[in-house]
Length: 134
Image (cartoon, rainbow, N blue to C red; front, side, top):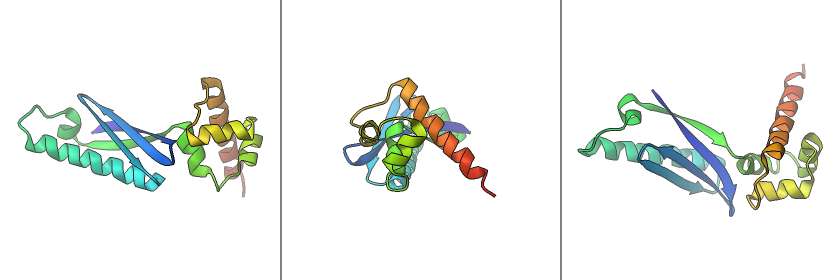
């Protein structure tokens, strides 16, 4: 079974996803996170059916089956949790200014690698704290 990576981002009030396959690219947008995941699955199924009905050489992911792994970019992660975690709370757990987090959440700016790692570490720390509750 082939693993297909779908990278999900957020910009211009929409989630967007990109799947890079050998010799083709699948790109979709949707207003919601669940919607973007469904749109990716539907687009890949449409592409698979097209390959099955063509006379071209069939890609491995079509022959062997596939599973989708969703990877969120920082913009999608921050947007997904916007309204669940305040920017003030995110600022406290990441050490990054609220306004800058807002730029990252809307896709207006992308964090440099060091700041990206701080955001991810902040979410991991929060997850560990939640999992330690008895």
